[in-house]
Length: 66
Image 1 (cartoon, rainbow, N blue to C red):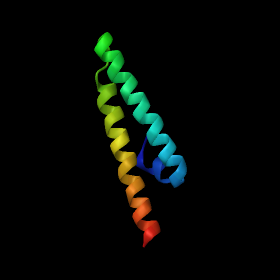
Image 2: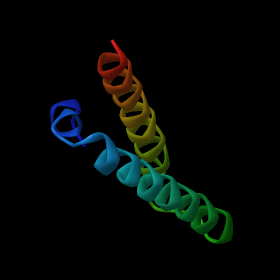
Image 3: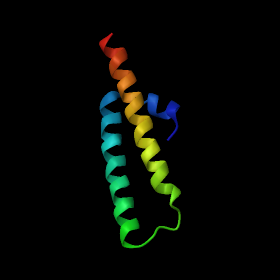
Image 4: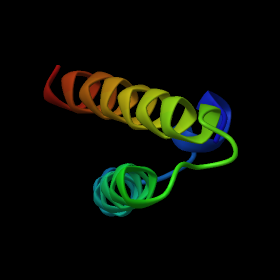
């Protein structure tokens, strides 16, 4: 998900999306532990996507507080 798409979401939608992505990330890691994934970059992409969303969420909250 691109940053521009993330910025269009509301704060509550973004929080829900972060939780969904975290669950997906955990599922990917567990699946990889059981049987190796074909594309390991999926794990890295999921982690970076979560970090991107958390960063934008904190920016939105700081902007809202000011």
